[in-house]
Length: 133
Image 1 (tube, rainbow, N blue to C red):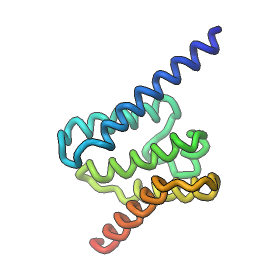
Image 2 (tube, rainbow, N blue to C red):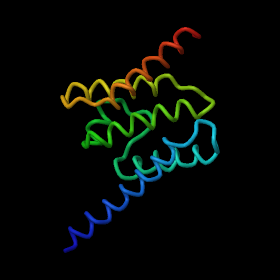
Image 3 (cartoon, rainbow, N blue to C red):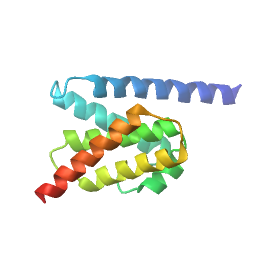
Image 4 (tube, rainbow, N blue to C red):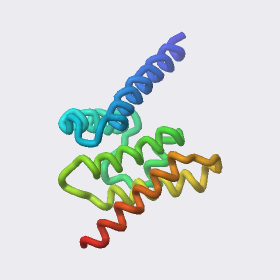
């Protein structure tokens, strides 16, 4: 009974997280930037609290901490959004996100259009960053 309540609680937290995450992703690019930053911080805090993630974790460590492939892909998206929303650009975060996507492509053989788009966006931003530096 107690175990079921824990599962229900975790399921509710995950549903709330994805609801906020969808608000963040699906909003217009520059619509309410402060709200987007707030939602981004909440999402990163969710991962930090429940999966003990840190900004300095590499892709391999993140894959060990976040065992669910969908959540791991969402984390990579968060890193991309963080890069796009925050003024201080950290290309290392993009490389970590790309490493996560490559890891997912190697371990999960299911085709994912969303994952392909994410990979291409990451590669494009990394390429642009390399051109300017």
